Image (cartoon, rainbow, N blue to C red; front, side, top):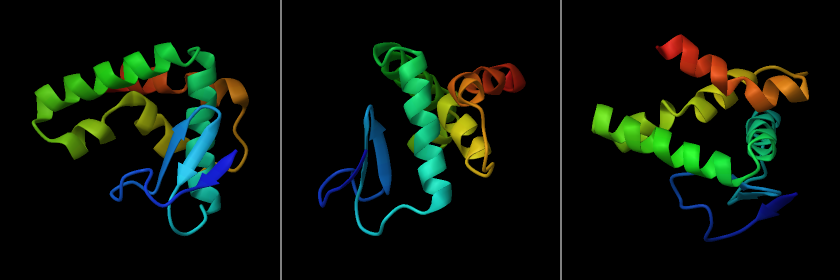
Length: 109
């Protein structure tokens, strides 16, 4: 469910997914952005929400310690890398959306 808000997510982000909602501020999301956030919805569902959020934070923290840059740490989170790859594809299976992030870990090793 798409929710347009004024104060959330923070200005540096256009949208954020907190299952089952996609919050965005400003202009409606385009097709690419909707696909990106949909990937996150399936990732969150596959990992039963808590697992997703714990891993997301751990991956971000590892990236922050490694790169000393919060934007780079965000970009290197496997969930984000996967969503950026899959957002350009118009028809992606649910299984691939849910678990593609694992291939992003393998490729970065």
